[in-house]
Length: 453
Ligand SMILES: [Zn+2]
Ligand SMILES: [Zn+2]
Image (cartoon, rainbow, N blue to C red; front, top):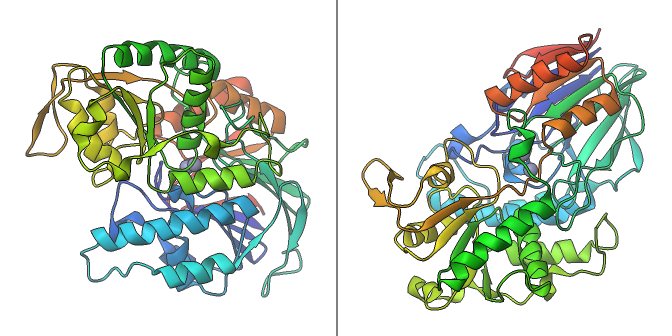
């Protein structure tokens, strides 16, 4: 018997799934919901209390896929953890970074954040598996058919991101994780297994976004350069909120290459936080993972550290570009604090470059226009004096690419995950239009789906 259960959020948030292969219990990702705090941000681990659990496999090191792993391991210390070596290296940075953030924000006495020492132990216990190497996972208590073969495929989303192929009882199941089929600036796009699968667990982040809204990377880079030059030549500065992991490296490299090609004004570039350390991990892995240009090192880009700028006014003294996390301008992060300053500057601009959750401050700011007023929280009204421009440099597949994945892997059953309700519904319709015979499941929290009887 093979079953699936969603342990995390219904839509985008804390990603966590449970697969049971004849008694071999595998937890797939263990994320936190970045919009929530404390216990509320965690998956419902109590759903795992009554079922066998053997392994935890982490698809990539973004918080919505790895952020609750330390809590999962506290409750289930026997779990063997598996990821790619790159995800393991990135996990060390992002989980240590999260310790400091958690300690700052938690006031709930019931909720004990994890410590740096616990992260060190956790990282040591992660077993790594390289892309396209196969291993067999055996279960301690599982039945006669419980051995599962697994293989990681480069998902093209961020460094180390993996799509995961499971094989058990002659059935193949593929979990995309977060997947980007076409190229970004540094990463060349995903590799898919060259096989038909029985079940596909598919992310649907851009399932409801029209393909026209997500232009090709290089065309969008040209538009970016043009709009940026307008602001910079007027003496303004540009704030770009980015995820420290992935988006920062891709966008910084894109800006540098545009400057080198003389398509963009050569101004000071500011970065900060753990983005720099993450760039070093990208560089260290440039020969061992897929790259568009293996010689290119992100760390060779001349940048200044925004944490060393004592007064925010300094950013506006001469034209500059500041890349700050978090990507969705979540309250309490650098990009949120900078955005408050930027909004009052009439010559400057905020450029958004990626996905904004509709409940995030970033979404509100990305929709605002010059001279409007917005409420970032109930009490404070802020007048928008700066320009706001939205760009799309996605690290997720667009609708057509998602359909291409479905077509190539040709599954009978598809479980739609990691998308807003609208995206999931839209993908379900498109997949059925393509082929009526496919069976589609929505991964409702806690509901068991039988994949093989
Ligand atoms: Zn991700
Ligand atoms: Zn994700």
